[in-house]
Amino acid sequence: MIMDLKEIQNLIKFVAKSGASEVKLEMDDIKITIKTGSDNDHAMVHQVPMQPNQMVQQQAPTQPAVTSQAPTVTTTVSEDSKYITIKSPIIGTFYRKPSPDKPVFVEVGTEIKEGDVLCVIEAMKLFNEIESEISGKIVKVLVDDSSPVEFDQPLFLVDPS
Image (cartoon, rainbow, N blue to C red):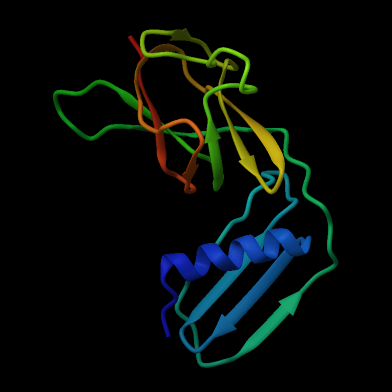
């Protein structure tokens, strides 16, 4: 039995809401470990083939407290493109402003440097400031304000030059 992405995401959300620090799920041909409240403060899923065995294990609950996340940064593959993609480090709702009555963090053309806040992602009633790990200029905002985002979803294109 292979779990699809939606089932895994629902499992991550359920575990995060339960307050458990770690859950391991082993089924016929799959092993999933979800950790929350760790140094990274986000759920991690490992899917590996294994021997037939069914086992679910849950450890003591802890409340994760997330205030700042480091986004994933990857270089685009296109030969004619020199842009870097900044991706979401967590699942949640993407906000371009710190609050509805404030201006957006960054616009197309904004010069950014390491540590600048690019956006906020709300996950489980926690507002996580997403900071840049690179310097450059915002070329494109890839997500609409108040939109749901997935883990590793592209958020911004940045020209590092």
